[in-house]
Every structure is written in structure tokens, then in C-alpha cells.
Length: 142
Ligand code: FES
Image (tube, rainbow, N blue to C red; front, side, top):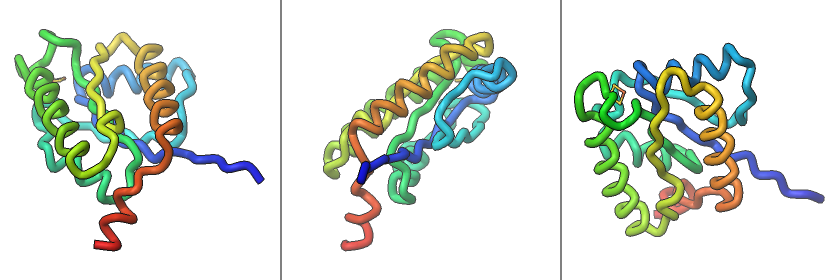
């Protein structure tokens, strides 16, 4: 019997660049794993630490934010704020015994459909190699 693990991943994308890149990837019929769910937000700078942690509690195996390229955020510096919050949230994940690599920050312009699809595939493979998150099981036993 073979074990196949299909990671559940939440991609939080800003509407101006990364969501458009995801759209472009779809229009170009570029493949990326079906286990990735995309959530559109006005700007990654709006994404709070709790927004990154809650998906893990709800069963996600990985979460990534994808914003505009640095210095191209439509709200000036939202992606810089998000980058700092992601780094801090990684420390929280490590503190609760979850691999910080399960959370990441990426940057994609609206013209980067192929790069967005590659980002999805690469992150999916990273999480697949890490295996399922044990957080929901830990949360239930607490
Ligand atoms: Fe895209 Fe701020 S609008 S990261």
C-alpha cells in the first residue's frame, strides 16, 4: 500500500498583483496542485498574525502569502509589513512545535502567472515533504 499525502494549503493573495498572477496562470492553463485554495485580500499588509495562525488550527498543512513585488505595493508598504509579520509568525509556529517552513511570504506581479504557478508547485512540494501538520490533532487533545 502506498501512502499519498495531499497537503491542504491556503494561499493569501493581494488582489492587485498576486491574485491577478493566479488568474493569469489559470488563463494560461498552467498547472498547480489542486490542494491550494486561494483567498483574495486587498493587500498582504492587511493580513494579521491571527489570519496566518487560524488556518493551521483549522487543518491547513501550509499557508503562504503572496503580495506585490517589494516597492510595488498599491498601499505603499503593505508587503513590507506582511514580510515582518510572517517572520514573527514563523517564530510563533516554532514555539508551538510546528515547522516554520509551513508559512512563507512570496512576491508576484500581475504579469508573473508562470512564476505564481511555480511558487505553488514548489511550496506544495515543500509541505508534502514535511508531511501533515499535527496541529489539529494536538489542538483536539488539549
Ligand atoms: Fe499587493 Fe499591498 S497591494 S501587497
